[in-house]
Length: 137
Image 1 (cartoon, one colour):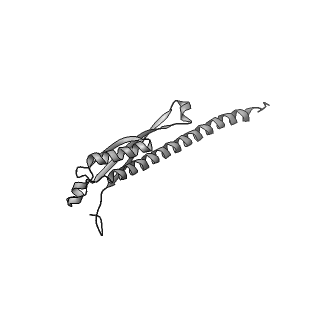
Image 2: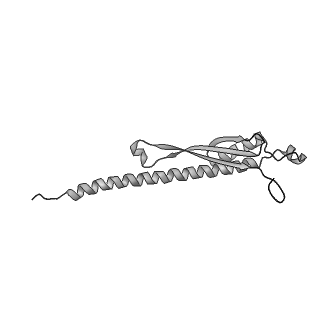
Image 3: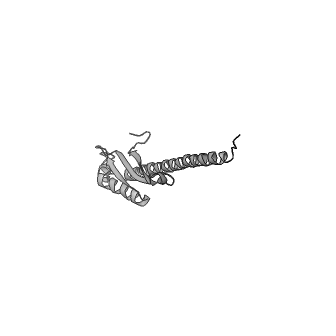
């Protein structure tokens, strides 16, 4: 009869390495998800900040409520700079829909062992200018 001495040690080593790999994937996955959620939140807030930059000439004259293209883009970029990110800002043709896209990277903790040192993330946010007394117009 052969002895089974040492069999458990080999099994434990293999299972431990596999569990550490799964744990690393889970932690980096959660980290990327949190970074993406932050990018979405920053993009939404930048779009809201851009929405505050309405065109005063059109608003005071009662013509329309729309964002000033240059002022809205500057407000969104200023918010992105304060948040430590960068992205792009777009304004609809009628000046009432603002869209901000944020891009960035997540520096991996465990996947760097496998040669993946970072993963790209992006966030999207938009705001629509509404006005009205009893309901949005």
